[in-house]
Length: 370
Image (tube, rainbow, N blue to C red; front, top):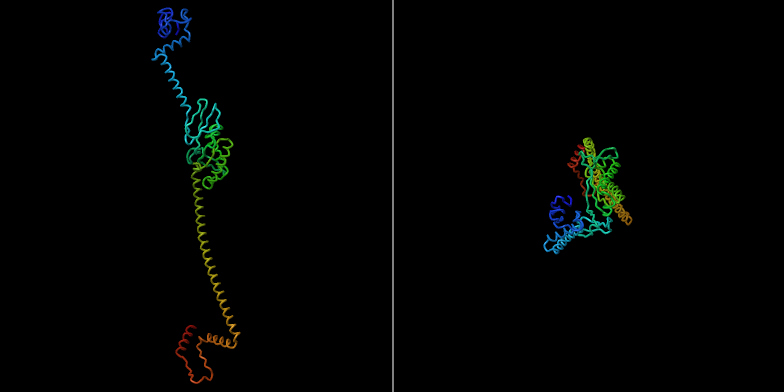
């Protein structure tokens, strides 16, 4: 809208034009400076000055009100700046301050901190252990976990990575999207480890060994990238063949489980029989040792008895010889049915034959012979 109105109407703020209606300026007053009589637009400084005059008149207290409003504005600005300058670091975090975009050496521990915003900015990183799941669920339609084993079988692996930030500066500033990079490198490490092993290792035989191999490969790669991450553990949650061949793999698994069960039963039977055989062998050895000790002791006793008899014989040969003869004859003839009577007898010796006893013994001998 032009500053001069030829029709003599009001100006843009309700004042009259320069050529009529009292000659008021845009703020309801007469034109000032060179822009008035010649019909030129008013000067910018005049407009600002007039606006300040209007504002002072609108505020109570004149110049004092203007100062109060200015102070309020200053307080509001300071409050907003102070709000931006204060920041909080959570218990599981550390913060790095940047001055003109350059990271400082010291780290901000958990708590309340102050920095010179906007000259300084703050980046935070969680230092507690975090868990990321990688791979699709086995038997699902997700193919992100499909991997090729060393024996040319396809397996679907789901695993998790437990990690934490070990170097906050490297984590925040040396690598772009470190969490995404961790996922990609972990998938690559798992594919490498699975590709070196047969499928049965990942299914059940050596999951722990594969997990440790993946952890070492992943940690070495992250250290090479200076990602500032430490891998604590790899856990293989599930591993299975693709859905299309799952039944065939399950059949093979059941057959192998049956084989393992039969082998275990055979081992148990073998251990049982071996234990029994060892027990019997130990018993026989103990009996043989006891028999040996008994025979040796008897032989030693006989030898000792013979030596003692020989010693007595050496002292009195005739007496000893006679005694041995009598003892021997007593043993030999003690069970005989014959009675020997010295020829010539002697006075008072009456021959006596026990006929009933002899008949009884004779009948017993005849029956035994038949």
